[in-house]
Length: 315
Image (cartoon, rainbow, N blue to C red; front, side):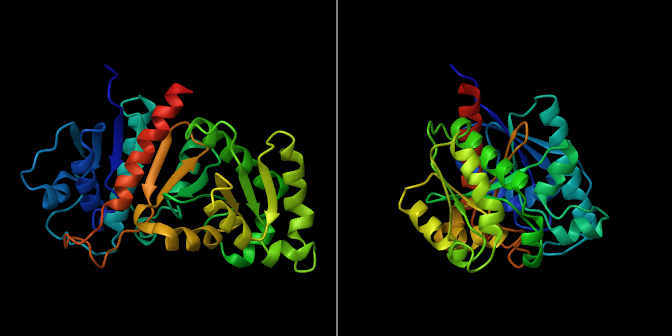
């Protein structure tokens, strides 16, 4: 009988909904895998009480001061804790104690208050691994890879390059084949301007940068198409004509993705030596500690990590 995968879970910002959605998700999925949860046991027990979960090990880092703790609070202490949980997860990955990692939400404001310069999980992994990670965001209906992430919209055109777009497309193809077991992926590339610039009438980025990349890579990836206007590209992907969409900037992907099903959205990081996913929501400080959080996205993130990890092992 095949041994169950071991999924690492970082609790995220202890003051957010991470502890709650992690517990609720694992409670529903404890039969699917073994789990190692990294965080502060005292906070975790606010939701678990004496409830014991099968196939779950908790690594208690004991970094939170119980005396002044409160949910829904942006704090340097809690920001530091969320990074320490990640550091421990990286250690477990390096010694193969866990097979993949699912990260509950952190607060960018809190980790910056703690003195860290990361603008999110993806940037943390980039610095720690010296890799160039790509965000692949998905739900039950569509998949998006992002060429650029957390930068001002005014900077996107300046950052776009032949090399960056090419790298994103290649990593997306590799993920579709190896992680999702799609033999001949079909991928569409969005333009950055309305109507994909109408052949240069509304902007120049498509003709100068994006189109040359697509032309080059189409020889290797026959299922590659674009650049198309984002509205057409997304519509065709929703009609199952493509397996993934390459988005030029953050909201080009996030708006349709969340409209189409944020409750089951997942963030999968490509370009790493391990599988890492997270739910597609933040810390939700306004409802933290109130037993109101929906664990659906966390459940989807765990299931996605398991599937991708299993497919990689078979590849």
